[in-house]
Amino acid sequence: FAAPAQADPIYWTNWTSKTAGSPGSASGTISFPSSTVTVSYSGEIFNAIDQGDWSQHPGTYNSSAVDNAPTPNLVSIQLIGGNSIVNTISFSSLVYNPVMAIQSLGSSDTASYVFTQPFTLLSQGGGHWGGGSASLSVVGNTLTGNEGNGTIQFHGSFSSISWTVPDGENYHMFTIGAPVPEPETYAMMLAGLGLLGFMARRRKQGPAPA
Image (cartoon, rainbow, N blue to C red; front, side, top):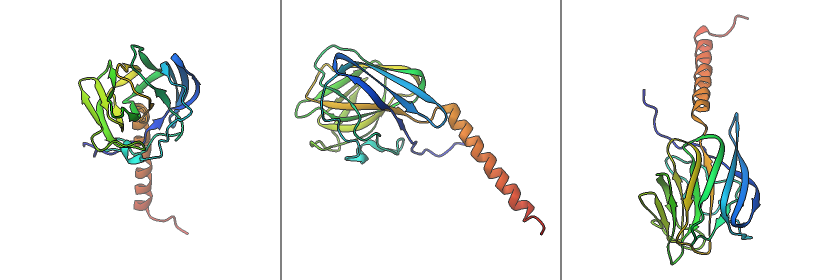
């Protein structure tokens, strides 16, 4: 039987170490229910005091596929772009269907993320500095924003994701996360079905004799 489509909880990266530069570097972890993936980033990092706030306008990050805005709320990687630096996110083990959240991409001038992989635009909207319901657009593997918040998803299993930001502006932020890995999802479903079966048998048997 086909399962109904529903939003997945996304486990977001907790970026614990950052070194600003062009290029710079960062590292963090994604803590899934039964495993932890180390996330490494190499590329531009703008040394902004403002980390953004993912708790503002949380609806711009929610969709039929994602049911929670990024956390920690005040942790992100900041970019300016307008250069040829290749920004790369690497995972210590394969990550299934990763989701990138982006905040404040573009302004009155557009800014673009040009990825080496195809992706799907899941959600979008305006944020603290303006924008609107159609502030992000996609052509091929390029995401372009006019002060846009939103999320995109890469479909499949990934060890890394790379992109450039040839059209820059001051400045925009991102973070990365993923749903529960597929084998863990199946294990959790089977455990849930087993529990339901146990409860059904208990009901059928009735209460234990006094």
